[in-house]
Length: 45
Image (tube, rainbow, N blue to C red; front, side, top):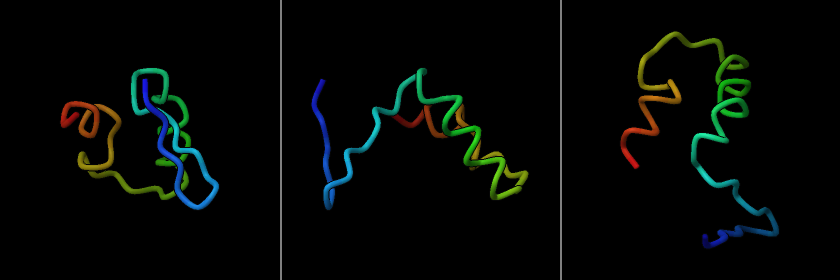
């Protein structure tokens, strides 16, 4: 799998393993909108 680095920051792969990390960050913004769910973003891959 390829790696994407932007300004010395390596982006994480967006796969099922990223779900817990994404959920953690989404809880910080405290927005209850389906556009910001892991499933909603994953399905567009």
